[in-house]
Length: 272
Image (cartoon, rainbow, N blue to C red; front, side):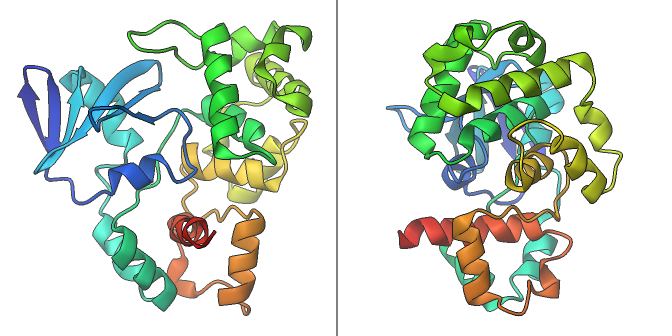
């Protein structure tokens, strides 16, 4: 991986492949938007950046080398050898066909609180509505950035009442958001300590939060806490798994079932 400083930002090259549009818009994260100039603008860990695909990599507009080293390299998992992972999971014919169609999808390493809260909001919801609720949440309680708002901390939301969150139009999810915020802010749920637990133990801790079932817990584990072998199941993935893997997931998916799941999820979206 090489960093090249430009007048308007920092370019990362020599990190392998990534299908950037699909990685940002395949249901992992909800805060990236495509601009009229075909860039992607987003905010993570309180830092805002704008991404442009270049001939040799990705240009992070407005981002310093410190931003790249402290946030974006890990966020996009740019130091992982994806070729060896893909060589393994594409032993399965269905995933091989998906990879040939979509290229390299990467699992994002997001901020755990934002991921937990976002997937609580995502429950029984569609992506445009999820993005709308999260947008109102950030504008209402986040800190202003150049082009948007940061994701509000658990500590900020923990002080709010259900009435103060009615403008989100999040329905029955509001008390779940508040319960999660209060448990995280108080330390009752220590998201960073979950990284040190085994998968089952970490999942059980997350499911102590109101409204957090297995799917929300698994998405939090996969997309923010480094549990790459977690396989989140919603109704689409459940149907596909039963159809294509009636005898169980193939051995070649381990230890990266989560990435295989993303390729299956994208195929399901295309088939709608």
